[in-house]
Image 1: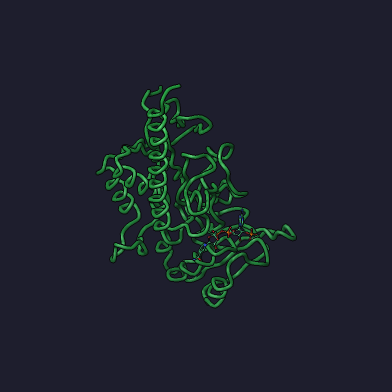
Image 2: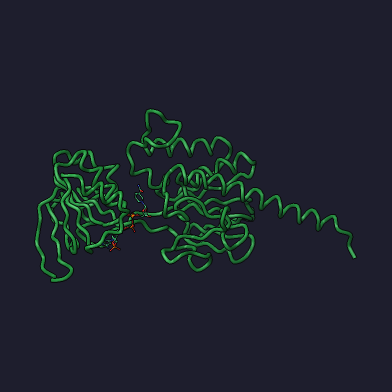
Length: 322
Ligand code: NAP
């Protein structure tokens, strides 16, 4: 199915970056189409209280905030497709974006597909997701009062999550696959100073144990292959995030980890007219506020690009025929 219409802007992704791009584009009268994903709202949908987004002095629940973002864009005329993009072709103009066999075309595309938490890759992990296995301490720590939880990872996220979890849990065990930690010294020192945190290095989680709910983990020593079990009520995997860029890797410049590369000081990718915003570009800050900020930049860049294109067309039309 294909429509003859060529939109000025298609925005792919419905998180803080995508909805802010939609708000700005809609207010610039570009009538954006937002293909927001089946699970719209992004990572904030699995967050509880957001306390660090300016303008909400009492804090706000993540899903409620995303609904507000969406409604604000809708108020100015943004339209939404609540489904996942399955294919993209930015090799020709107009650009083409598919949702299954439904084709959408546009002069500009703003990519705001975000990032997802990495999983350990265990069957038992998937089975116990939401039943003790979590990827977000901020969201789920309060479910573990006076419990023992395991945090996997050796980066800043693992230190931050473990430290946060000690507000609720009676004991937190950090399991890391090496002796050295990737985390910054200050985060590592803070976690090391916390008496509720215990450490197991050179080990990985081989199996999450439990029938219906996490009751423990089986660990494996990476040097000796020896395995042993420890009791635990929860498992938090804090092993990083991956950008959701599978659809674009063969068409757009990206770094080794798959994050899209934009021109310095801009949201433009290596293809003029294709812009990337939010966590799909940013593996450093990864905040709702930074994603929203770059979302606005994407819409402004798209608007300027379209104005320049129209300027060219008008100039060409005005040129004397020879
Ligand atoms: P990260 O720095 O990539 O660290 C991921 C950690 O997980 C590494 O220690 C890695 O081990 C381990 N790991 C990866 N895959 C694993 C697997 N399959 N099994 C076991 N362990 C695995 O990711 P991050 O901690 O999410 O941090 C990402 C970025 O955000 C960093 O730039 C970080 O500084 C930043 N950040 C900053 C703050 C803050 O400043 N407040 C908080 C959170 C994150 P190896 O070390 O062996 O590779």
